[in-house]
Each structure stands twice: as C-alpha cells, then as structure tokens.
Length: 287
Image 1 (tube, one colour):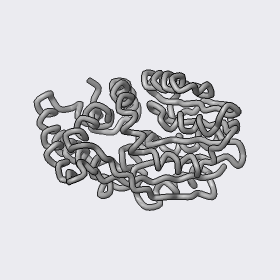
Image 2 (cartoon, helix red, strand yellow):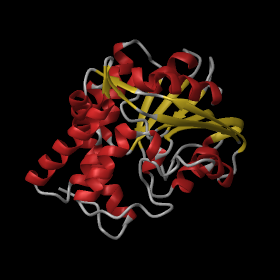
Image 3 (cartoon, one colour):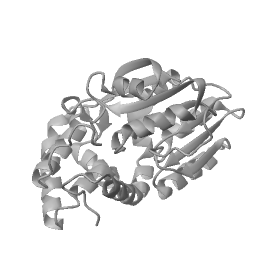
C-alpha cells in the first residue's frame, strides 16, 4: 500500500491520494444519502453564492461521487450543463450513473487533476468545489485554474472544513492516527482536512488567486448518525484521507487505532444518537 512520505513529496502524496479515493469510491457512493443530509445545507449555500441558476454552465472540481454535481445540474436545467471532474476515475463513474438514474442529461464527467484544470478558458458561469481544495498540494494552482475557467463576472465557490476544534468528528480520528503513526503535523501550505479552515484563510487564498468580491459564510453542519460505532463505520469505509494516514501502520496497529477512535467518538453520543460536531466554511468570489 502506498504511504504518505515522512518528508512531504507532492507527487507521492497525489499518487497515494488517487489510490485511496479509488479504493474508497464504492463506499463513498453507498454513503451518499448520509453525505447529502450532512452537507446538503452547505451545498445549497455554495450554489447560491456561486450563482448557479437556470442555464448556467458549471465546472465541478474534485467532484467525488457528485452529490453537489447533481444539485447543480438540477438548478442549471436543460439549458445548462455541469462538467464534473476528479482525479479518481472510479468515483466519477458513480456520478455518471447517479445522473442517469435520475434523468439528468446535462452532466458530463472528465478525469482531471484539480491543480491542472484543462478546459477552455473563460467558458463557465460558475466553478464549484465541495471539500476538495483541502487535499490539493498546490491550492493556489487549483484556485487559479478555477478562476481561469470562469467567464468575466462568473463566480467560484467552495466548501472546506473550519478548524479542528470545531470538527471533532474528523479531528479526533486525525489526531489519534497522527499520534500512533508518528506523523508530524502538516506544515503551513501543505494539504489536509483543516488546511483552509482558519479565520480568513480561504478568503485570502481566493483573493491571492485573483478573485474579487469574496463572500464567506460559516455553516454549522453536525454529522448525525445512530451511534458512534456508525460514525466509525462511515469513516472507516469512506474517508480516504484517514486510510492514507494509516497506511504506515501494520494491520494490528490499525485495528488498535480504530478501537481508540471508537472510544473517543463516544463523547458525541447522547439521547438523539451520535451528533458529531462539524463546522464548514463556504466562500465564493468573482472573476
């Protein structure tokens, strides 16, 4: 299994990322309804801020299994279109299938690295990315590519996690795995779940990439599941980033890490089941 190098190597990281998301594609798709309940409100806000309306031509960067792709396609309608892109081919096939299943004929997919957006410049009304930018080794390259794809006046919009202290459902596993695998914390500018979550970080990154009139919204998005055990199953089956971090541990050590994660996540259980704290940052800017 490909592991994260101790000294950060963007090429090796990207190879590992692609492999892990390919491996997680089936599970990520099967958890689709849970993901949409969890991220649905933030997704609607991203599409609002991004100006996705009837007739819009939309580029979806790091689209994953494409829940937000389908939401954008419904808004765009038959006069518009959505191009969903991702580095992992398998996960895009699920997007194609999901669009066909619900009769959306305005969705196309293309395998594409978010840092090398290969589309005709200035042709999209909106560019969106839902919890994808955080995993780009060169986030500025991705944002500049998103801006270049926009027509003048078009909007780029993205969703990222805020800070670790406001995202316990994810930061607890990350912290445990990082300690057990003896992984150093990511240096500034390196990719990771919370790399764009600090106050003003995403907005500043957008402005640096040449976007203007940047708007930011903070969105509480608690992850609600029947139990902590169900959250562990969700993360264990679907979160490629966690598996990538775990790859340096042997099977027994990985089992022990997941057992500790399960115990620690029980703190979020209550009368209404598991309510994992999560806070998202939604931001958009204009070309």
